[in-house]
Length: 356
Image 1: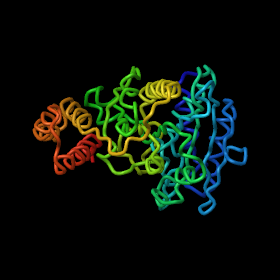
Image 2: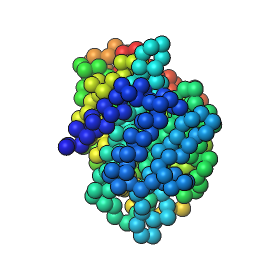
Image 3: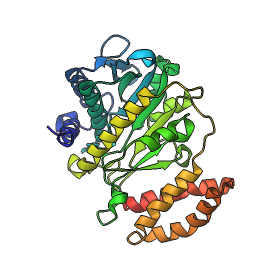
Image 4: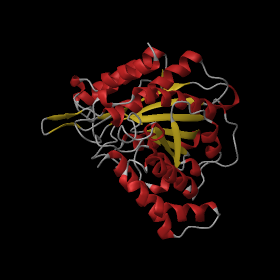
């Protein structure tokens, strides 16, 4: 079975009718956790919950995280890289099942794909890899103390983790079919500016089949499980293709995903994890106050330029982006208002490409 076929298989398993949208605390949500644990066990990933199983309960809401580990080797083996994605979704609302293929079955399929590759091909000397499938990311638990990733941080020492890699909404092509493949195959990475050496790590990863676009974490509100680790001052990278027209809709189903892109991204993710695992220890870790205004403007300008012939709002965005990009490229400090405009431009471009 090819990587692409395996990714599709896992997405379809997580979106099966009997899982009923994987809502936290429901039979479907519990079955989804069991499915993930079964996959980890089958590929040889060790259980890593405190009781020696794969399951970390979230008692107040009847949910559970699924935790595994791939042991490190050598002098860095006591340090950890955490690779995580949430597996829960919205369940059944008003009689309709919200399947959550892109949110977040695709991301979990990618996490499992990387885990399998690391086990099968082995890892050189480097850090332990923690594989985490988080429950309770969706409302009403999002950013609440019952959120699965919050529960994890509460019960594990953040000081052991040198990097948290978080995935959410990574399975779809960006933009409508008529836009450039350089847009369609884009994946955003946020947070590199907050970790020592992470911009260099991102620049070193081969990106065959996808276009990696940097954005600063400050240009959007907290969007996923990386929030819990950011609060704990753990360096993180958040990968996402952004929200699209099927976000939190019953139409978010497996056949709408771009599995070729998801396969290329999964290969990129494996390379990222391997590079991160083998990085030497450095003096700095989490960089409080790090910014990526220039990188965010460069990404926005590139996408707006590519979209200009076919996306009406792109031309207007370019006219506003040009002076800001010139100012930031010249090393001049942006005003608070100008920094706020970056967030506004991200929102406008996301809406335009999503068709909303």
